[in-house]
Length: 186
Image (tube, rainbow, N blue to C red):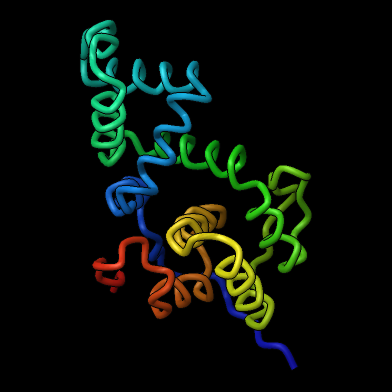
């Protein structure tokens, strides 16, 4: 007998800017440094987009060190007004750097996807609890726990209000805290 969980009636997802602010420093550096080094146009567009909203002179950030650019971008993507930009950054990093993680999780949950982890079609309203736990355990065996936690938080934004089953895992499994010193969301 399999048990299913219903979709949330209340939106309890961690907001994208809060995710950015909750990233462990090593993971944040990995993500932002990757985009800066490997996706230069994307990084420049992010800097210009954020700078334009803040009425920041476009060329001033180009004089900064690469570290200062990453720190400035991360700090600003932690603001609510930049939630969409921050979400795009995280999605791009996962697709480009952790496609295997995405595919592995989606395969266990029998969610159709392409070979990079892009989901084809609609997400289910419920998940089989045993498959969900199996998928999370498989990810935790193969990937760092903060990356798994971040992915699950980001996955929650794929549904209208997320899924109670995933929210429960994120809340109750200490391995899925983004930062070890972080207090689980209420």
